[in-house]
Image 1 (cartoon, one colour):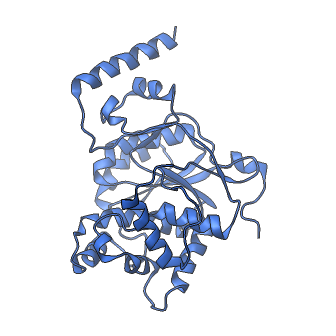
Image 2: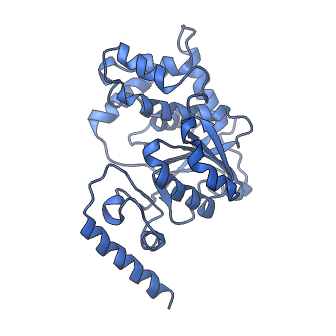
Image 3: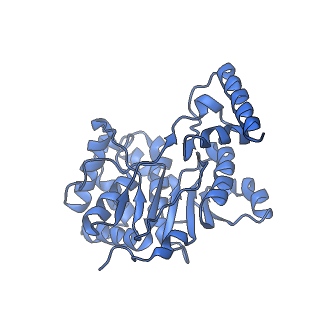
Length: 304
C-alpha cells in the first residue's frame, strides 16, 4: 500500500481546514481565518468551538466565507469538556486541562466529519499565515515542519503515553509538535482503530488514551496528538513525510500586540511564513507602539 498518491496535482488541490477555537482566541481567530483564505488552498474551514460562541462568527459567514461551525461538545460521540474534566477530577488531579485535551481529540476525531477532504489541515486559531505555504510536495508527500527542542519534562511524558497506547517506542528523535499539521484522514482513522484494538475494554478511543496517561500527568502534558500521529505514520507508512525548515515567529504578541494590523503582518511576512499570537504573553505598550510605527513606515516605503 502506497502511503500517499504520487500525483503532482496534489500540490494544487483544495483541502479543508480544522480550526478549534477557544473563547480567548475568538478575536485573533478572525485574522487567522482571513489569512488562511488568502494564503492556503482553502475549501472549507471547520470552526470547532462551544456552541455559545457561534454568534461571533455570523458576520464572517454572512460575508460568504467558507466557514462551517461545529459544536466541540458534539463532534465526538459522548465526549465533551465536562466529562473529560470530571475524569481528571475523579483521578484527584486539576481538571483545568480538560479543554486542552478535548481540543487534541477534536483534531483527531475530525477525520470522521462527513465529507471532509481526504487531507485536512489542522491550524492553531492564534496563528496567522502571512505567506502562501505549500503543504504537499510534488511527489505527493506531506511537508512536515519539526522542532529540535527537547524538554524531557514534556516529551518523555508524551512518549510514555505513546508506548502504552501502541506497545512500541517512538520512531524519530525529534518532535512533531507544531502550530499546524496536514492530516490524511485515512491514516488518522487507522490510528484510531489501532488504539481501539490494542485494548480489551469497550471504552471509546478517547478514554483509552486518557487511561494510558499516568495519573500525575493528567493535569500537565500527558498526551500530544501531533506526536502520536507523526510517530504512528512514520512507523506505519514509511516515507510519507517530507521534512523541511519553515520560518515562523513565536510570541508575536510581544512585538505587535494582540491586535496586529495589516502593516504588522506585512512586516512579519518579510522574514516569516506565519506567526503565533499567544494571548498570555506579557506586553510592553511603548515597545509595541514603536514597532507598529516601524511596520507602517516599511509598508509605506514598499508602495513607493
